[in-house]
Image (cartoon, rainbow, N blue to C red):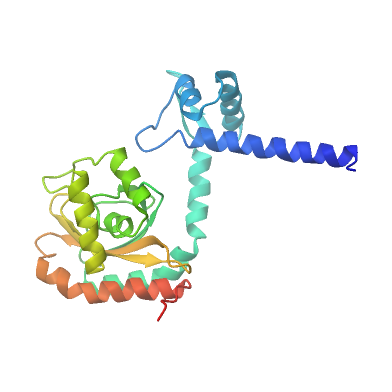
Length: 266
């Protein structure tokens, strides 16, 4: 029979796990859309009683995970999370292992190359290399990009479970340019074409005058969790150039996948 000390330890462990779960519940309320939230909104979105949500927010403020706007009392994510996020990115295997391949792709293509990872709804660009004489403005490192209208995003989304695709659709297909895919039917059709072709094409769907091609990267279990792209101005990234770069792009994505442990079955 368990003694009182063992029972107390179990109770303490359970309490800590519950607290961590509540903390995650608060953090998951925030997104690129919901950057600032009131206490009432956080309580509703997290499903916590308002006093519980308030206690969690107060504790998270003390460790820098949450910041409060003194002007209106709303809450936002704290700088400490940004610092920890940068540390996590710097220690990601994909970031370390893919770097030489991203650099090589940039040099051989003469265009910018990007490495993105999927967070379930959007793509986070974790590495970017630019040709020394062809600077291209646009997405910054650690910036989230929409999955439905970017090359890196569609290359990832095409190989996810149908439930994930439907979640992205349900979140809304925001229109950025005249060529943005904005209907569920058109996006599903596009993803089928990407799976058949093996790579995605961004036809100036996120930024006007910018086109790119992107290919999926698989982890050791074969799951597509990242992608690599070649990006450039639309006048250079013609259909012909994209087709000519496709073999190099696919080779790069395959090389990165194998570098991190993916072994395609015969």
